[in-house]
Every structure is written in structure tokens, then in C-alpha cells.
Length: 193
Ligand SMILES: [Fe+2]
Ligand SMILES: [Fe+2]
Image (cartoon, rainbow, N blue to C red; front, side, top):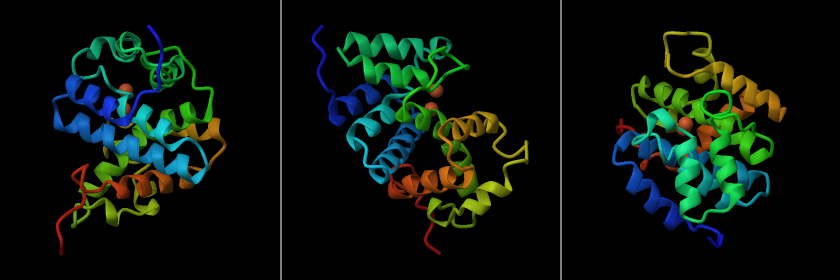
């Protein structure tokens, strides 16, 4: 099939087609926003980074056992470019795929995917329940508390930061800022005081 550059609208339609659940959709929006924020900051192709963030977990709701590989199949069927497919699949490196993140886009996706979960949980324990009130320090304070956001594998985030040679503080700051841009869409605008 001829490959063409997917638009955000096409990516969004695919996301909605494969993910009916609210929480997976919100996770996709959060990851998209963080990828956009980082791309913009670094002068990269924001649209591409965002679209890959949006569909990275495309298969998770319907094919949890084949997570990552099924996303690759679906995107291939839809004629998506190899570059997009590789990047999406590489987010699960060592977990559900053996495609190692190589480009900056892939390394950032790998590094911030789990981190968005930690930021969500940190927002939810604020009295305001708002991501607008989350600071780097509050996320760092919960880093070693294994019971807090227990599903979030901190070692993956640390490995990602190491690959990128960015500090955890910078990575956390970018993740918070990206998510703040879509606070409403991800249900974390919080309650007005
Ligand atoms: Fe995933
Ligand atoms: Fe994810």
C-alpha cells in the first residue's frame, strides 16, 4: 500500500475506533500533548511527534496480550509510514517489543509514557485535583514511594532519561507542562477553589 503522512484527524479516528474507554483516550491525549510540547521546544516536527504519541497504545484495549505488535499490524494495514510504526512500537521496548528506541522522538516517547501516569496520580492527590498545581518537586517526592502509583515503573523513566541524557527534573518539567496544556481534555483541570 502506498504510504502517506497521516493527519491528526486520521490518528484521532483510529484512536477512537480502537479505544472506547475514557482512561486510555485520556492517556493518549496526555502523551500526545507532552510529545508536542517537547517537539516544539526542540524545534522538531510537532505534528509528527504528537500523532505518534496519540496512537502509541492503539491496540491496548482490544489486544492487551499482543500490545505493541498489534499496533504495528493495524498501522501497516492503514498504510502508515514505517517511521511512525517503528516509533510507536518502540515505546514498549523490553516490555512488549524488542524495538529499541533510537531516535530522539522514540526515546522521549519511551521516557514520558510512564511518567504521565505518575503526574496524573500526583495531580489527583492535590486538594484541587488539578495538573495545573503539580510541580516537579511534588513528583520527585513520590519517586521512591513504591506504593504511590505502584503501576508506574520508575526504572523505565530513569532509563529513558539516561538514553536522552536529560535530567529527570527536566523530563518531569516537560511532562507536567505538556499535560497542563490539555488539562481539560485529560480531566485534570481540577475543581476551582
Ligand atoms: Fe504501552
Ligand atoms: Fe502508554
